[in-house]
Image (tube, rainbow, N blue to C red; front, side, top):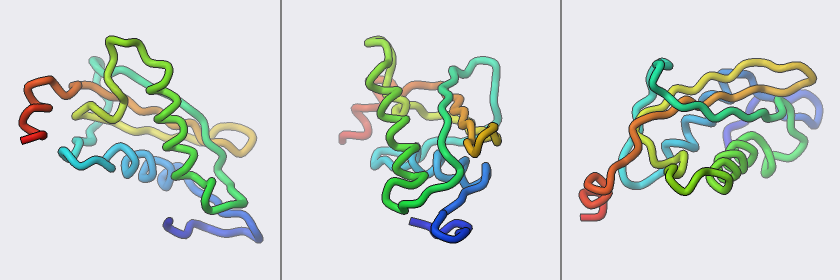
Length: 121
């Protein structure tokens, strides 16, 4: 894990760090590289909050982002794809009150069945 700013025993991240972590987690897949772009009107949104400071590197920001991506997938409609199975994303993270960062993932262009076939070949 990348070392972020440390203050005493705390590891702290900025909103830019959080955006990069979200992008890294979304791009961690073996079948293609997603596109990251600006927000457009036709995108869906998923939002969550993560702490900006951590005492433990192993349950730090990467772990937290992965946890929320998995949580979204466990509560999605049966007609929706995993949030990791889209081609286009925009990520915006902003400071919230009380030491948290709000992360918004905008997404569109689900991978089609035909595209899945080409990935598996």
